[in-house]
Image (cartoon, rainbow, N blue to C red):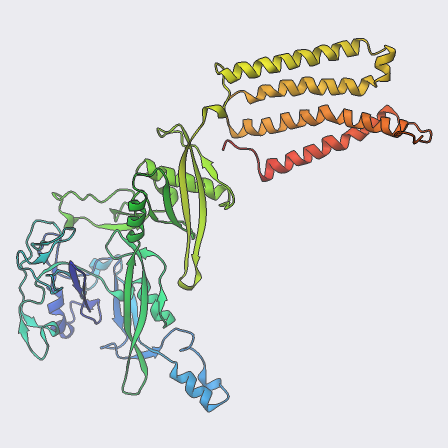
Length: 539
């Protein structure tokens, strides 16, 4: 059919594609299509299929045979229903589809008969949307106002005149020569190969497509499709095609780019399904690139001096993990992989440090799921912000904080060590024996270790070092206080409180020492839980 935008119109005459060039009877009606293709610079080329391209082949000569469409309602066994009313209603819901098959030109195509196709033509248009090639009256792509119509090379003016009996000119034998006037590009496009058409034919109801690459374009988008029908002579409702409206996702990319222009924050939208294609981002990444057909690792050259008609290129989508064309793409890719490794936590920020870029800090990120089941959308919105590493987060030699920490730690170590040595040296004195020197000595040993543990605060922040600090400081703290708790508890049990005189009992040192084990055990369990569930990290 015919459609137009403010700048282009497009047209493809409906019918079978993939007709054989050696079929003389068939060629009488197809010669007009065979001679209507142009290359990159506007030179006339035959509309002949290449190996690997698809074509439609009818089961009969004119594609009039029908079969029930593949949707659930059309496939119901109406004759099994109990009442005539139910059967009649069931049959009224049946849709009928034209019977054809989609085939692919084989690799050894050169050995068999060649096949032609009905081309898809794109036109320049004037301000009213009518195809034209008149100089100065064409809407020029990418610019405002009017200009000349050129072929894809951007240099050769479009000047196409043909003659023939074309339905586009009115039919009934009308002769015209302007069927392809303004047609600057032609290709083997047939909507029956496209995902939105195939999905609508299968569902037989209005639907939104999943995101996909637009035909021969770097744009991604989604399509709203509505089936359209005719009735045949037997009163059957026949699927005649699809009314479709496209929504280009570059509109989302443009919105993000405009609203986050000048901002350090990056917004990226990624498909939930593997392999996690990028849909749009505030950095301008489209998630699609043009590559060579035979080597998808090589970009397709766009130099105007290169004969583009001799190139075989295609557009491919980019998984977010493979984005690496520039620094911002590397930030998005690395951050997404880190988020996936952490299973996309929604209640916390995930940070990542990227060493090979000029930024002395980390990128903090969060992902938000975006799902719309009724149209099949399942995306993740990723928010990434650069966070400079504050100097006070680390204590390094030469810092004022380093000298202060070292001084306090040294004094604490010296005092506790001196008390421990003095206490152990006089442990046989009556006063020391009465104070329960074993547990008091253990407490002083814990204080010595706790002071030494403070030295672990010195050094760069790494995941391993943060985890070590958590273990050493908390363990030494419990090791120091546990002896005081059990010693106090033993005194309470032996001496009682106030006027209450306890019965005579004995609590040995070994039993008292065992009372301290639960304190240490509980602390170890807590530390293990944090180590594996929510470990201290650099962020």
